[in-house]
Amino acid sequence: METDLFGEEIRKKETKTEWYIKNRDEQNFDSKVARLEYLHKLNPDGIAFAGNMELVLSYRELQDVFINGHYLSVILLGQAWIEKNLHIHFEQIGLKNIAKKGSAFMINYCIENNIINEILTKKMDKFRLIRNPIAHLKSADYEHSLDKRSMNNRKNPFIQLEDDAKEVIEISGHIAKYGLN
Image 1 (cartoon, rainbow, N blue to C red):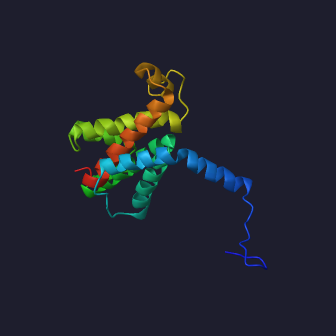
Image 2: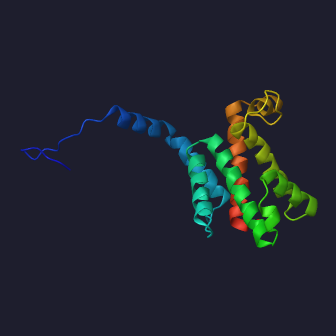
Image 3: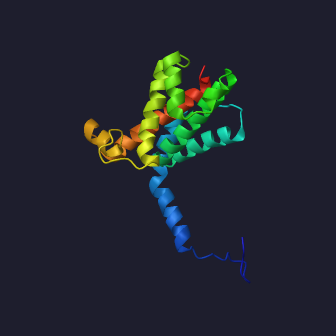
């Protein structure tokens, strides 16, 4: 703390940038706490796993973007994280040729060969399809776009997106805790 000649604290004038960040944090505080509490409900004991650092750090960042309400990022990063887990799983079970393929191929291989629980693989495929219009240009009538799903489910697009992100977080947490075996 800096003081003046008389020992009084010198108050630094808050910049517009500092004001913006403080104001934004205050406005979003309650919803961030609610999302963190949601994560704690999913995994009350927390999750500790080891592996390559990209996998560990991307899982941590996945949780951070969820807490901050960046749902598109949750879907993109979550799908990438799930895909990396698939690659690792195929390498571990000795199917390195499959591990080099894309997520659609790996997921279909899992389904056709009953390698991973069917519910899990169907959810992974669902996230892949939801991620596609975020990551790739798709036609307006793409059935897995946020617009189409929101209309079909009669949900506000922001609510639909939040629900999608929660599902990605749930399945990612399951994989982090129990793996793909």
